[in-house]
Amino acid sequence: MPNRSVLPGLKSARYQEILTDPSYAGQFVLMTNPHIGNTGVNSGDEESIKCFLGGLIIRNLSICTSNWRCTETLDEYLRKRNIMGIYDVDTRAITRRLREDGSLIGVLSTDQSLKDEELLEMAKNWKIVGVDLISDVTCDAPYEWVDKTGSGWEFNDNQSSETFHVVVYDFGVKHNILRRLASYGCKITVVPASWPASDVLNLKPDGVLFSNGPGDPAAVPYAVKTVQEIVGKVPVFGICMGHQLIGQALGGKTFKMKFGHHGGNHPVRDNRTGRVDISAQNHNYAVDPESLPEGVQVTHINLNDQSCAGLVFPKMKLMSLQYHPESSPGPHDSDLAFGEFVELMKNNRL
Ligand SMILES: NC(=O)CC[C@H](N)C(=O)O
Image 1 (cartoon, protein in one colour):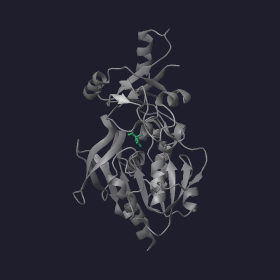
Image 2: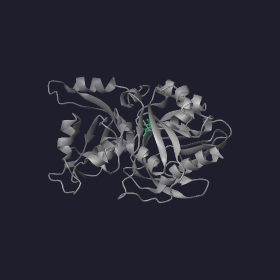
Image 3: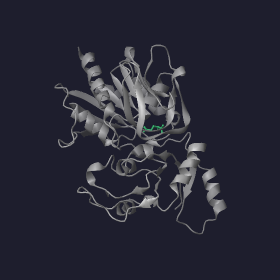
C-alpha cells in the first residue's frame, strides 16, 4: 500500500519518542542526523500506544545496537508495527529542498507496478489542510493515568504537596505530558477528543489540559467548541494543538507555517521575565497573535522567527504554549510550565 504524507524536515533528536508522538500522524519524518538506530528501541520510551507517523526517512540505519535499555532494533520495531522506513536516502539534499520550499507532500510505496506519474498524481491529490487527524489518534474511552516520571529520571524536586484533579483532553496526548502532571502531584483523568464539555465540568476538575495533537486546528470545529465551553470556567493549559485550539476558541486565527518548527533546539523567550528556554517543538500551524481579543497576552516568542509561542489570559485563568514543555525528547528547560499550571489551579482554589 502506498503511503502519502507531508515531509517536515527534522533536526536530529531521539527517534523513538518521535515515532510514537501522535502529533506526527499523517506525516513522514526526515532525520537530518545521518546515523539512526544505534540505541535501538525500548518499552520505557514510548510516547503513546502506537506509531502514528506515515514513515521514517533516514540516511544510515545503524547495523548494530548498543544501549543497556535496548530490547529491539529499530528495523524490527517498525516492521512489527507496519510503519514504512527508508534508508540510504540523500537526506541532506531533501533537507535543502525542504529549507527552500517548506513542508512538501511525499509518497513512499513498495508497489513496484506503480509508475512515477501515478505516484506524482497521488501526491498531488493528497491534503493535510482541513483534515481531522485527531479522531484517528484519540483514546476510545476515558481512563485514569497514575505513572510519574521514574525516580531515576526525575530532575525537579519543587513539586506541590497538594493534589489537583486535571482532566486531559486527548487530541493525541504524549505520555510524558501525563507523567509530568503526575509528578507535579496531579490526579489525572484522560478523556477522548469528542467528550462533552458538560461531562468534564461535572467532574469538577481543578483544571483542564488540552493536549498536543496532529493536523489542522481549523479542521476540528467540535474541539474548538469544547474548548470554548470550558475556557473561563476552570483553569486551563493548552499545549501545541491545545494552544492552537485555544487561539481559535478565543476568536483568533491559525495559519499553516511555511516550514513549521521541529526538533529539540528552538530558543523561546518568556517576555515576562526575559528568560530564554531551549525548547522541543513539533508544529506546522501557528496562532496569529494579531487576531486575538484584548486581554490576551503573548507571553512567549520563538526567537528564530518571532512567532507566537505562548499565551496567557488572566481573566480566563488560561495559559498555553505552542511547544512541548514535557520534551521527551528535548531539553527540560520549560518543565516549569507545569508548575505554573499547578499555581494557576492553586490560586483558583483560594
Ligand atoms: N505537536 C502538536 O500538537 C502539533 C500541533 C499541530 N497539529 C501542528 O502541526 O501545528
